[in-house]
Image 1 (cartoon, rainbow, N blue to C red):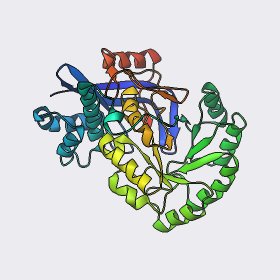
Image 2 (cartoon, helix red, strand yellow):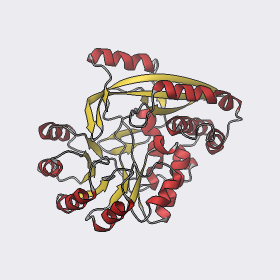
Image 3 (tube, rainbow, N blue to C red):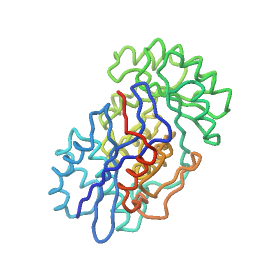
Image 4 (spheres, rainbow, N blue to C red):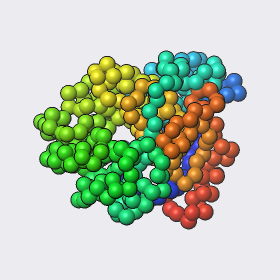
Amino acid sequence: MNVRLHRVEIPLEHPFTIARGTKTCQRSLIVVLERDGACGYGEATEHAYYGVTLDSMAASVERCRPLIERYEFGDPGALWDLLRPTLANEMFVLSAIDAAAHDLFGKLVGRRTYDLLGLQWTGVPASSYTVGIDSVERMIAKLGERPDWPAYKIKLGTDRDVEIVRRLRERTTAPFRVDANCGWTAEETIENSHVLKELRVEFLEQPLPADANPDDRRRVFEESALPILADESCLVESDVERCHGTFHGINVKLSKCGGLTPASRMLRRARDLDMKTMVGCMVESTVGISAAAQLLPLLDYADLDGATLLAGDVADGVAVDNGRVRLSERFGNGVELYKSAAADSLQVMKAEGDSCREDP
């Protein structure tokens, strides 16, 4: 099995701000696995918060190259088990390889990935659209640019959070979901939850820091007027059990947990524990979104708008149209990389006259 890498840089439609900082473009590493004339694609995004760079990810893939190329390819889960000891602390890379392996395997056997995971494409939820932190006027404008989405995820973590939601509520009747990205205290979370419930917010995602005091987590779980979903507190499989009893649900991201292989297990375990399930994404291309979309039958909520936030793309695959997810006609994850994807994306950056910035 051959391994190839593409480094891509894609500008964002708007500067994207959360409680931790702002970015203007997304750098990603596209992993390509090739066998018998078929190609599988996976994506790992560069991310300052997790200390992940294109150079570090490329070096990790090179370290695993002999294992991958010698592997007698079959079930993607077996490849994940083989690589896990080597990539124990490098989940972003493991996720990209795992997604590529699922994409390739599905194409080779003529089946879609969700089918190979034992799922049926029924009752899948629509995706929310994310509005990043900005001036209230700009956040209203961003909402207005995407008027037909069934739900909106509002990034908060400012000194005017409730006011932002009040102003946005004047513009739409669609449900809101609030993500404070670890930016609130326990007292703020409980107080805000009661007001935000009246403003038709469905849940609060990770309001407390990941290292919050256990007593604060338990207090918020018991006293919040809204369900609390874990994100930064639920990174890998073992975190699901730890979140039970202090969170009402989990938001799984492939790049954080290591790919489709562990993500499907995490979601099934959460459902066994009667917790709400969600899959989110980074700001990433259609390569990454197409992999995450394969888990939709396991979800109560979906946040798969990552490619929608970009000003360009590097691949064709699963599409998210006004929140409705449309499968590709291809097997596997359904991905096909555009020709000269890396060069094309760099040209888009030059045309925009922008530099790729991520402010911590």
